[in-house]
Image (cartoon, rainbow, N blue to C red; front, top):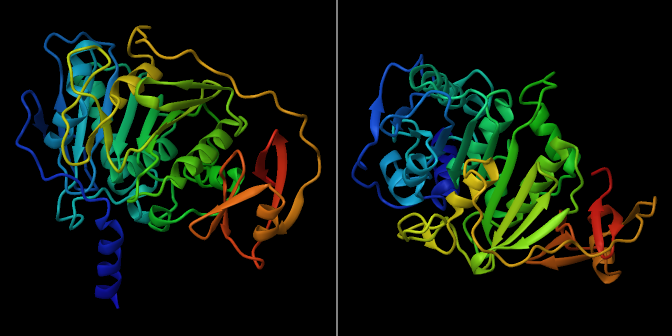
Length: 385
């Protein structure tokens, strides 16, 4: 039974497999002795020459079958460490921990505060702050795919450590492997409760979160972007209705939810980190397997975090959401089929999604019943969210 379970887990995460490991990138150095390291991870870092104390720290997490050097080289974070004067920590998973070198975002012992891989990454941050003089109030984390899922872990388990994060083609915190392949019907409050349970009793500020996902991702279904949005807007206590929308180069639609949460949908992009090789400030990375030519996500993430010093590349003018009608108080409960025929929801691939918010409602049939509440013009959210 244990063998069958392990094979099933390997099969589920196989889709998160990324490019083959690259040779060590110039400047990336392995660090040992950074702590007790209960998750048995490796630590690599890059510190620009002459970096003064009090500068930001960025943690970048690779995806399955990648390694630290491969993600450092492909994502463009080395460029921005130099340009914006930040230290860079790149944790690395091993095949001894996971057959595909995935961070174990689905293992209870690795996603909780004070244990496993999450604690190992926390110890890397503590080492970097102490050794490189990084500003403990400006620590950031990002990652792709399995690394994106582990980014959500770090933001949930250590909100007192990270000022902000960015999840690329990842999954909500504590959703397990099921989210990878299908939408999961939870209200924003239910998603938010998972994060709050990661550090019970915590009442301090929560990290700001940027979400990046390709609309054509068939490895980690795009519904995860909406569910991440629901999770973190609820944690921050803001509406799931965007306060502003902007079109970035290449057609990427960037939705803002106040200043706390940002959702970036990259049209036609499959599974990978969006990059845009070139020498301009808003260009970065190297194209390859799962480093996909589109827009330099690392630049826009750095800008969201406030690392860029206010420099903004040309974009199309921002737009604001359409004027909404006042939300009625009532919650309409009906079958998912009835919701779609009444124009409150739509179906795709046998699953139902609320119009406007795109929240997952479960299977499209007459048996599954859900409650929807209108918050705007053709904009519905799950009751209780």
